[in-house]
Image 1 (cartoon, rainbow, N blue to C red):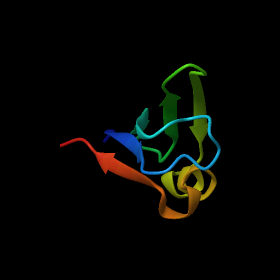
Image 2: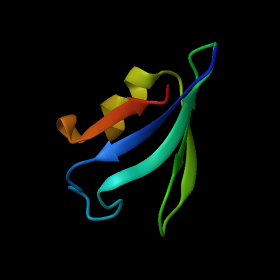
Image 3: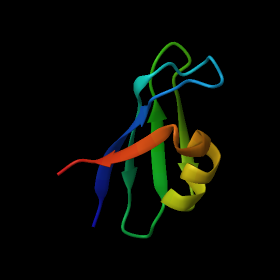
Image 4: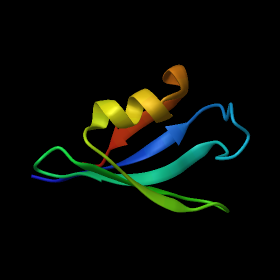
Length: 69
């Protein structure tokens, strides 16, 4: 099963990503997470789990994961 999501950032502590929807992503059946960062400095990253991705990019709760239905 694959789940897609967006990352919504309420506050941009780094001054790079901006606010609002800053990335799109997917969680694959084996738990691997791929994130496509949007905006001027777009990039793609891969994580071993959603928890690992949030630990680095969650900014203390300022970034939330919203899963697509």
